[in-house]
Image (cartoon, helix red, strand yellow):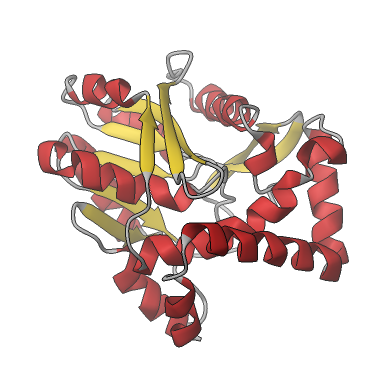
Length: 278
């Protein structure tokens, strides 16, 4: 399996995306549960299947792109809103990047570290270790890149996020990821209760870090990606419940920029599983 992953990571970008598109549709054809989840969640957001059908193939592209980001050669990246990053660091309070499961979300952190790491220090990102031992060990090394620190979803990992922001560095989170039970709260997403992480809001409150929302748009052919960066539209509330809802609304607005590249098959409304932070 490791050999296959590394082989896929050396494919040209157009071929990788063609195979990924096919993989997305094969998954759609073979999994009734996935189809049901995709349709229900996109409908909850107000989209017909015709409006988001491209997201079926896009999900497969995202899966293969991850291998290229982790193990392959750099891919072309454009920036839209990079000036917001420079302005945010000028505050000296650290920068908290929030990225939903939209476009090629794996490319945002490595691209930041490559462009801004020398000037503004390493970015620290939180990840949930894979359950399979071989994959867990593989990804530990794959995610560690120059100016990019990957820390596990544990109490020690959270402490490292806090330290990074207090040093004026940056942190990256996926705020639409369902956290373990007891580590989030129920808040509205697309008008429906969704168990939502509170970590992003708490980090911002404790450090006064600047929040930027970002996503990596998948461009056609061999053009690569465009990373879009912008501040949240409103100042984060001091009330945790309100702040968590504000972040969900900010993610909704970002996803509406390109709903055909969102992972509608991700189980956003699932009940959280019980898990202890070590």
